[in-house]
Image (cartoon, rainbow, N blue to C red; front, side, top):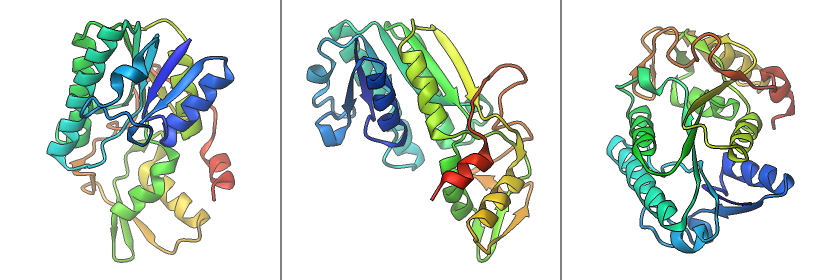
Length: 249
């Protein structure tokens, strides 16, 4: 079947397109670079013609609070309207584990608003919530750096590989709409600061990681379980962190 992947040229989207094509679907990558702009609606009707499923793994080009809220709400409204007009029977969105518990985080708040629009909409849906990605660890360390110190809260952290995120999304896209949420998380649980320190050592990065309970994660202080799923709730991904580290550049 025809499946349109919004954000289909990005880190997750490119992998999702490849996995869907490998399963025999007509997978179409839709992004500004391919002439599809969900903020303005440009190219949406043409891209969605004949599609049965739309997968939204797009991301905001800005992380400023008002801009990211505007991106996710406007693009989702435009997508859902175009899907209804095109007769799309399944809308799937990638979201984040823990967004309900961090109302002070502007990005999480925007993703929660996106989820509300989807659940209140007319198109049958699935929401796949994933934990943070291994691929984000270097950027997290950079954002938390003060001089030669990296301040990271010593809370629970259960990240996963982008490859496994894409596998979960592709699997859900080929199935019937859940009309609900599924969560997926990495196979191992760490202390956030310990994982960042492990990665920096593997990359021969001399920065020192300092556990700081008040260190903010993109604007928010974290509780012990802010970034991990409830016990027994999430499906477990396959790729372990050390295996990913060995294979990463």
